Length: 180
Image (cartoon, rainbow, N blue to C red; front, side):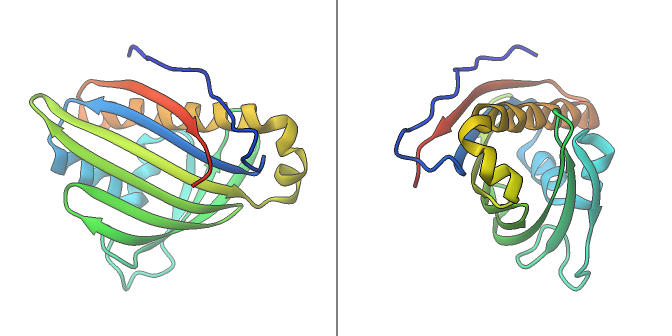
């Protein structure tokens, strides 16, 4: 997998604990196939190496539907673990998935899928605020490490998804944006 990546840049105006992280990748699969894999969060540990476990505390909402909740235990590439609770806010099949996230990280995640002639371009926008006390305390120093860790976790997910679907994938861009 070839990667075109720019170095993360950080706005001097953005609080060190706030991030807007954006990744774009191409995957040679049908948009609906990719959309299904992304909405079946309970299956993520089967193909996404950084996902340690997923709990579905509210089985009343079907995965891939508005209101669905998943509690996800994540493993970072630098050794720390964190937990998030994602609630699906908006679904547009097979074009987008939006979720609110609470826990060690608070924010919004947005997956946007754009069909191409040979698959789908996927953009993931993660607008978050660090909530763990140690993360907030050291954010001024560790901000570049946190951004690097996020992109590494996402790259692992892209590689795992491609293997899961038995297709090719390529990261096309990664960047850190400023505050909303």
